[in-house]
Image (cartoon, rainbow, N blue to C red; front, side, top):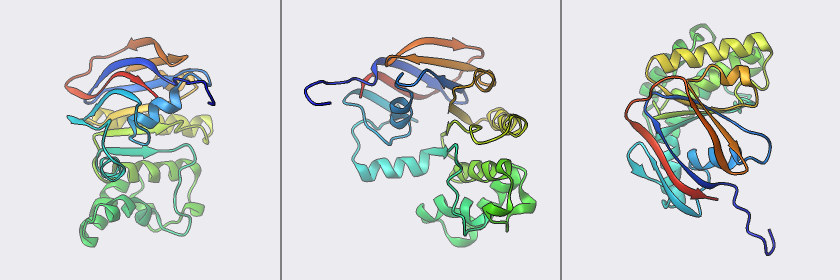
Length: 227
């Protein structure tokens, strides 16, 4: 910012294990967005290291990062980000198209993911024919299509009513119980309470790291990141 250097993150150093369920909280300006963008390989740190699923990704070029994102990370957004003219099945297929999966296989895998999130009977419906909760389930199925190492969710219940939000959080709990590593950003303590570990970011540092369950083998690591 002009002559001033602003470090959105300062000395963040942590390890998240495979099959952990982590919530990230913090006030506006705490560094949550930068942190999640780096975890999601959308941004790169100005210093430090980031290892994702055994791979050092902090210094990869844009093409390599795009490949990592498609293969290792499933993104779930607050506003769903579905293609309005495509069916639920076609939306879930999209990351498999980018991964060059053959049509028959990607159809089968996309259908299996929709079954997994409870939407086997809605595969031919377009987003405007689905409720908000159903659209978020389609988005979660799409995020799972490539069988990613990490499911990364940004305010996944922010556009949903309380009851529907709880249904989506129940689904995240089921996915975690099946072995999926889950990390989500939320401003809501009752949503964060579903996670087994809560990180509180403030002024670019981890102010609190509260564990409510044990993780296993390392999934990703960051070390002394600045950005």
